[in-house]
Length: 155
Image (cartoon, rainbow, N blue to C red):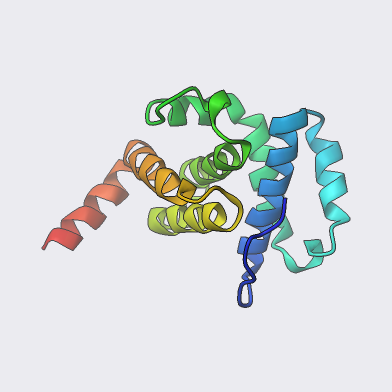
């Protein structure tokens, strides 16, 4: 899985998300042990430039919380999560994980980062799907933050 377009300098967290997506893609396609996938990705040339703590949280957290994340996503997707493309599924899992567990990241940032992953690695309009689903998941997982943001935007 490679990015479709070169990007400017990437933040350490963006690199962490990209590597975590690669690991989730592998896990969704072939299964396997999270520890083995983690070890393999640590050998990746870009690993040294990523936020390793965030990478660990995203990869291991998304795999460990897969059923919970899929349940949160299932309310807002138009098919079973197992029928989504593995890239979109992985991106949605990362976005949902950040919304649920990374409260230091504003919900709009978590959604935007997932959209950027989908633009780089996913299908042509997959980013629009990811945006719509995660916007609804954010309203479920962070209702006060979403409500406050929407109230501020409408005033």
